[in-house]
Amino acid sequence: MTARLTLAMPSKGRLREPSWSLLEATGSEPLTPGERVLQSTCRNAAIDLLFVRAEDVPEYVQDGVVDCGITGLDLVEERNLEVDVLLELGFGRCSLQAAVASDDPATSLADLDGRRIATSHPRLAAQLLADRGIEATLVRVAGSVEIAPQLGLADAIIDLVSTGSTLRTNGLRSLGVLFESQAVLVGQRTDKAMESRETLTTLLGSVIRARASRYLMMNVATSNLDAVTALLPSAGAPTVMALATPGVVAVHALVPAAEVWSLLPKLQSRGASAILTMPVERLLP
Ligand code: AMP
Image (cartoon, rainbow, N blue to C red):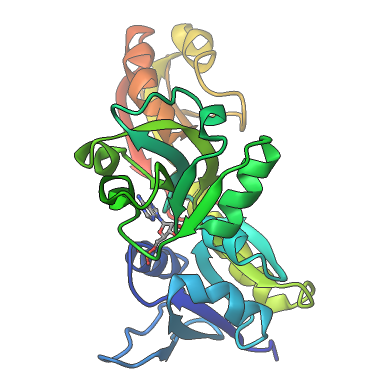
């Protein structure tokens, strides 16, 4: 019998919903916990769930309380614990950026040398600044980092940014990106061969790959077939099937979701018709 796997999930915050929907999309059928309940399980998979704060997930994994967990890469790096990053999950994307007040004379990261910087990521920020040869005084704050310059607590901040609107709203200007983050699956260093962990990693990976792909179907006159298929991304040869109408074939292919926007009009202009795309649920290479 396969050993049960315990998975720590973010109990709140911005990683909670997307973590849950990713786990659901694997087909494991996680059972919604009741109010204030911190544990649950999955109907179709040997997985037990523990709901904890995203920032505590690396600790729970390192200490063996759970086998795996979902959290932000920035939090993994900040905690600097003994865990392995098993998979990038493709959501919770953000970057750790340095910013100053719009009227500050600084124009580059190097101008932070000798200045006071507020951050909720002091360990990671110290390492990233040291990597760039910048010496600064870091002031640790737990939240609302972006108001520190206004309050006179610091000259600059190092904080997570996704759209940049919070920086703008607070009259701040970015000096550059120090670190790119996204949600990740982490596992214990010692558990590498655990079968249920490999299954979880494979199925989460299949959903992430599927989300980035679309199944494309279209009809093409055989005289246009070469011109149309030449437009398709090279990975995975398209399937070409005969239709009841002579001289016309159906072409099916897997295409990157990000390319659909530019690809469809080109396919149409080269003679493809009845073009449709469908979402893909899971994709194993
Ligand atoms: P929480 O504080 O629980 O909402 O989760 C914060 C985590 O969400 C961070 O550690 C990042 O990994 C991720 N995240 C994604 N975008 C942002 C953002 N714009 N600001 C802060 N955290 C973000």
